[in-house]
Image 1 (cartoon, rainbow over the protein chains, first blue to last red):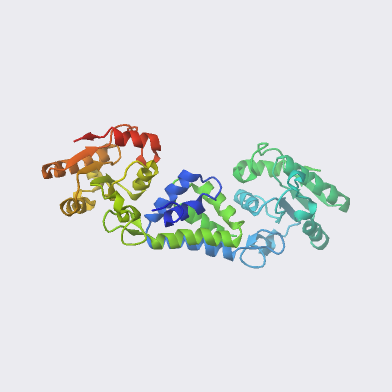
Image 2: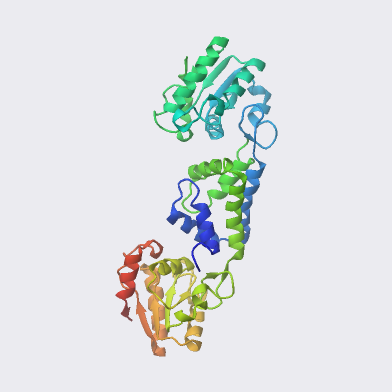
Length: 199
Length: 199
C-alpha cells in the first residue's frame, strides 16, 4: 500500500490535522479505526459530521446550539440580570460544569489581539453593547482568559460599559495566571467567580 | 445544552472511545471540530467512514487492501521466497517503513495467548502452513513482537515449520525487549532483520 493513497494513510492524514495528535498517534488511531467494527466507525463518523452540521450559534449569546437560542438563553430562570462574557463556546461549557453561575453568557468568539490583527470589530463586542441596551442587565462579568489578550479585552470592554452605569466585574485570579480557562477545575472556577471585583 | 444530548457531547463520547484519548482531550477535540469549517469536518468523517468501508484483508497475506490482494503481494518482484510473519497489519506498515525487506508478509491477526483464550486455531497459522505448501518459500522470518506472547507464537510456528525443511528465522533482539514493534525506528528494525538467527 502506498502512503497517501490508501485508506489508512488518508485516515491518519485527517486525524493528524486535529490539535494534539501527531503523526505517530494519527497512524495508531487510523489502524485502530481500521480494526473497529463497521458500525462503530459509522457512529464515530456520523457523530462528527452530523454533529458539526447540526451546530449553530445562539442568536442571543453566540453559544453553540441546535435551535435558534441555546439552552441557557432559553431557560427563563437564568435571565437574572447577569451576563458572563467569555471568549469561546467551550468556556461556556467550563463555566456550566461549575454549576454556580445562574445568569446568561455572551460569547465573544475571540479576544483582542493587535499582533494577530484581531480588533474590536472582529469579536462580538457590538452585539454585547446591543444586548445591554435591550436586555435588563445589572452586571457584566468579564470571564475572558487570565492572559494578556484576555486582560486587554476585559479592560477594553469595561471601559465601554462603565459609562453606561452597569456594574462590570472581572473574575478573580483564582484561576492560575497564564493557564487556559477550559482546563480550570470547578472549585477554582467557583472561587474565581466568588472573588470577582468591580472594574 | 445538556451533556449527552448535544452534538458536542456526542462527538466527545465517540472520540473518547479511541485509544489514548481521555475525557478532557475528547472534549477539547470536539470543540475544535465544532469550530472547523464544514467541508473539513466532512473530509475527516469521510476519510474515517469511507476508509474503513474500503478496507479488506489481502486474500494471501492478511494485510489491509482495497482489492483482493495487497500491494506487496501484487508486486511480482517481492515474490523472493521470503515470508515475514507479523502479528498485525500495522506491523507490515512498520516493516515497510524500513524499506529493506523485499519479500512477502503473513499477518497472523494476533498472537498465542492462553490467558486470553487465544489458541493456534484463532490466528492465521493454518493459512501460513497452506501457503508454505503452495508457494515457493525458502525462509520464514518470524517478526512477532519481542514479548512473551510474540516469543511463544514464534516458537510454536518454528516447531511446526522446521520439519518441513524450510529455513525459519527470528528477528534479533535489536528491537528493545518489552516494547511494541510498531514504535521501533527504521534503523533498529533494519538491525533486527540483519541480525536474525535461524531457529
